Image (tube, rainbow, N blue to C red; front, side, top):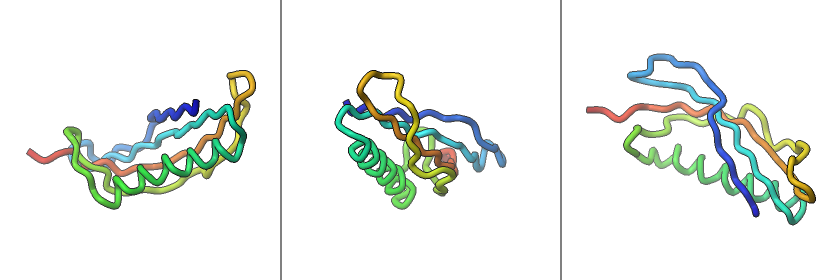
Length: 98
């Protein structure tokens, strides 16, 4: 603990060769308290934002844009004596050229 889970929920493909808009679910589990879970989520969100701002290029391409679609929200945790916080983020994905 903490556990940070990022998964794609879906999104809209503008043109997969040029731009894809993925919606990701960012989930954090913490065994400390709710505030700790929220702090870890905000740190993870900042890492994603920095990758967009710096346009960090990977084998798949780079993150082009960032939009919060749901802020940090508490949900019931499936793990005993833990807290769960989630956020939804839409990312623009540009594939690597060439």
